[in-house]
Length: 246
Length: 246
Image (cartoon, rainbow over all chains, first blue to last red; front, top):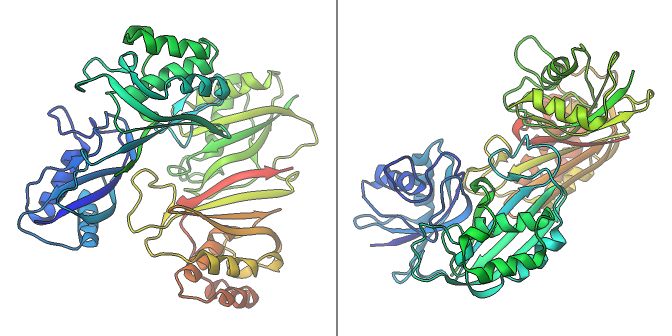
């Protein structure tokens, strides 16, 4: 009864998100389908994070258990990629995990990357992969604002209405804005996030970067514990589930 | 009669290449069409390089002249992008150029980037944007081989059959292989290249990286001045026209 830990890269554009749903194709269902095609076992593939529709992953981690079959990890990787076919979902690493490993509960840090294309013209090559913002952003001010969100806080102001977390208190280990040419990256690290927390924080940081809000406004918003006072949600297309620390 | 210098980013996947042709859509025709829609002038858009079908550009430079209209550069950029619509071709910069400027003849160096994805699994996010090579490449040996191609040489061994250059002698200023995680980049700089020279050089470097050829084999191939002895042409999808130095 081996447990497989898999690392997954995917393009979230044409999916309803990670989680299996009735209203369209999900990453989870695609991988579970590939496992079924491969070895006729009906498994549940459990991921470290449940990304929303349109959100991408460069290194999502998930696990599943096989009951009747044992394969070496490379065989599993190749077989799943074969059965995933032309879908933009690829298993980029596979290993046997100890029985105690749980992709979701064993994670001690989740890392997201948010990509912004900050230039006067829209993307030709990265359509659907970045948030295109033509107005020049001030990343120094964005970083000032980001600092006020670091540490343990009640993040209700950045929490989606349908968030199922038991508590709005989370600990943000990193929120950093950097720039390389026309691209701005926001790195967000925490043990766990509220639903849409990263996109909601980025939506407010963008308003700071545009000069519509002062950096200190973001601290005021955090303290208000009210989603209505924060900025709009940044689009899903710029968000990448980057990696998990166990 | 202003001359406009434009910088263009494009995804070459669904185009026959830069140059206007009868057998399919070209980047040149798309931009000429956008100029016509914008100001009713039928212009020729002249580029620094004529990329093949499937080759991308991050910073292609081109110029065109208007006879009856004068606009400020930002207006031209916005209008062309508007008329290019959903096509994966974007004007990312525009300026007025002196009458003496010629996108092709004024160039003193052209810079290409070739992207290789070197890992066991195919790309999920970069399909059509990288050459996927599962077998681990030795970039140290690839760089050794690349060094033997630097400088002025008869590059007949790396020249496409239909190349229209008057001489096979070119001067390669840079050919450098670098790696970042799973991605290998080959940077190629020269005043000008023979037709498919970059892809043909990369095709041979790949065989060195896989250990099928020793680095010194590439020097032997260069000296043979015979296309038949060199490696196969690397696929178009990994090649990017990066920038031009004037």
